[in-house]
Image (cartoon, rainbow, N blue to C red; front, side, top):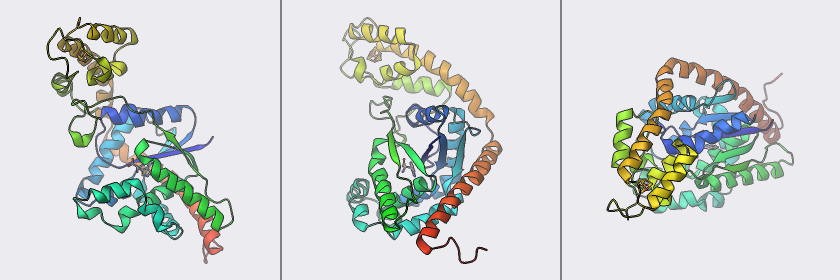
Length: 332
Ligand code: TRP
Ligand code: SF4
């Protein structure tokens, strides 16, 4: 079966948007039988500023705890920590030698962030090289498919160019050209009606308690045009309705859609139904989350990293042989 690889920067606890967007896509790929690698992109966390480095280890544990809670099965996939595998750094250096600067300078993510530069700390060699590091992540594991959000497509395109250029320059088929697997756009909105995001402070977390979840839903935006109880609503733009689609059964959801449009249900009642369904579904996850201890996570990451390292080193040997004519001067 073909390889799939994806990573996330260690930002800490995951919210419903991350889980029902990216992570549910990952669990699907595992269940379809792909040979999946998932990793904590802690080196990438260093490229966008050093202000939060002290949080990386704690954030790694919390993020991986949510992966496991949400159904990423370490017996059916390989879960690892990027910075623990030196091959990522070494391949990045080797690939940097064949990566034209123009590809990196024209990268839209780079241009955007440099233009909005408030924080001079990202004006680094490492940040410019973000896509080269990401290419190494992917190419080390011969990944056929890389599930990512739309924002990562330019980086994936660079990974494809780099693999092709490497193979062309060394006249061999050393690096597998990866393809993106675009995650379906998460329909989950934040409690302010914008995209759910940690930085907007509008997110609901798997780790939130019943009470906090209830509070967040009660305070959430609905259809802003529904000022009075008898104003008709527009479920399609309402963040509460977006959550019903996931947490409420189909029949009830379509009923809510109808009675919202005719103003036969009020937002308070509509939210009550959601709170109950949301908390019922999340209860199981919350309980599971509490049972996964830090040592269990570390043991699992240790095993996963060990296995990933074997694969990464095989690819690196191939690359070194292509570049230097041998994987090492000193091998017998
Ligand atoms: N850049 C990705 C993000 O911010 C994380 C990432 C790093 C990644 N390396 C990767 C994703 C390799 C897929 C494949 O979301
Ligand atoms: Fe949103 Fe429900 Fe209010 Fe309609 S009734 S606007 S779906 S909260």
